[in-house]
Length: 111
Length: 114
Image 1 (cartoon, each protein chain N blue to C red):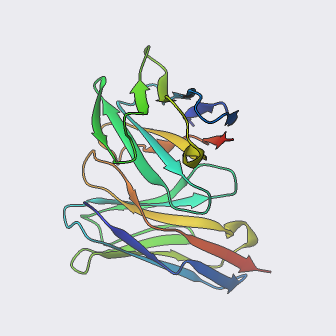
Image 2: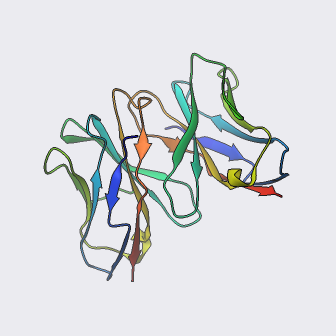
Image 3: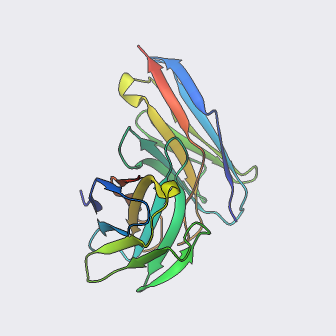
């Protein structure tokens, strides 16, 4: 089955700086890669996603890049703000099957 | 924006008791899922449900677990005889035509087994 690795497990950045979180996946048939933000006591919230036929996608301060050959994808947050502090999970999936989550990154924005 | 609704938000139960966690998926979605998250760990897949039957389940989803869609709107997870290690957040999710179409999570039920 699919295996998703995520790094780093914790990340602290100064407010205004950029944050990058990286994930690798094992199943070359995976074709959809969402990123979720989870705040304390809440469910995962989709923040951005990318499909395997696209190399990069951007939504305001958030961007995701995908390298299918290397089987890795990354989340980039620019101009970080205190409200970006949360746990971020990457995930991978193929077709209508289950989501396989990474182990999560606790991002802390230092004011 | 459409939501996946889960009830209750928190459930405390005695070990050995049965619990039923309830979910109302987004109305036009066809695929339904349960995931769980033990405190401080990643979200793990339990089961997926499509066309009124289980389409996939993980090794966590043993004979103590069952799912049901009793009517056109609810989707339930039953744990027959709870164990201490069942304590976790349980998330329901639903998706439309194919998983990448509006895959949405509910806010979860925190299950505490004492």
